[in-house]
Image (cartoon, rainbow, N blue to C red; front, side):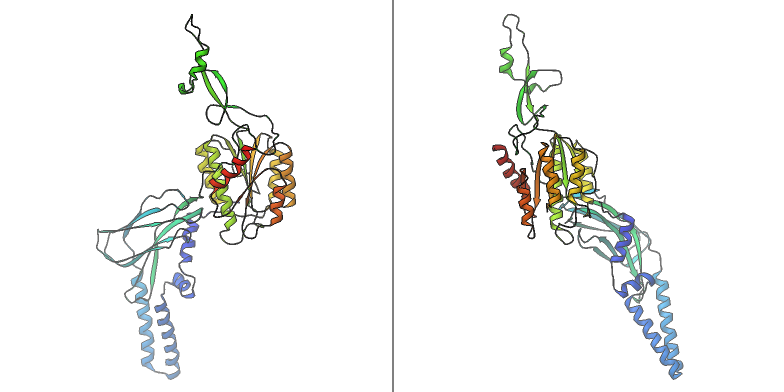
Length: 433
């Protein structure tokens, strides 16, 4: 269900990704540069010619080339006496957020012709290379760069690699100066409301009368006596005045209480089935579905509701209620990957375990006959359901037809859709019915 990269594996992968050609592979394993490889091949060819001709001078030329390569290898093995630092990175950032990093290299001994490289994932940006020609002992060189994560996920910044060569350029040594740091990129979120928060319930019009008083917000519920701890600003002075006894000067302080709506329990079902999402890496429809799920979850947590998130294979986390829990939920959404499970299996699981007073948001690019039947059972039980269809150029029209027959609110979104606008349009129309 989740996919991530640990810093250790990220460092190994970063080193392997620095070059995939034969010369790069040989350089990583032997330390020989392309020039060094050519010198050795030329020496081998000259040695063969020397054996065929019996020429002593050609033998001496071959031995001389081997001595030069060996000397270059020894010179390049010198230890790099430096101290490095990387500015503190945030552990979590938003998709599209600019992150600034500062690198520092302090020489404990004179350093010559060293190239520093900060390895970055392709979704973070291009790797940063900093050549250092000469750095005297005791001096420090600093470099600042920035990157912008283009895709949610778990990535590594680094490792910081130093590479240097011998004076002849025949060999090169690479050393990791600073390990990789893990970075979690949260998906983008928008302010989107997917339910009617009043007594004008959405389709179908018959709903279980499950309503509770709420301290503030939404629709008017009624008046009650003031108790210690209530906000004095909620006192209704006109109603209080009606209870005033003119003879004794005593009365009841009455405070306003609001209507919470149908329920404070919300379940979000995100279709992670690989079969019907758009192809490609990343999948456009899957990233759009992640954006919708993250937006709805953060909005409901902000409103103080209990949010449970499901994918095809399992429930993502325990039910959450506070905005602090929203950070953990965004962490999990950042790690989600496509899987082989089917949507109808998740709906079946929710059908068995979900209470009737739960609002469910189903986010999917496709609706087959099996999933439609199970969603219909949920709706017939009186469960509030909103169906978010992620559409793209190959969306099946039959799936949209099945969605229309369910009788619940349907929101169609695409990669370029403004969630706030499209949800406001659909839900406001539902509230007026």
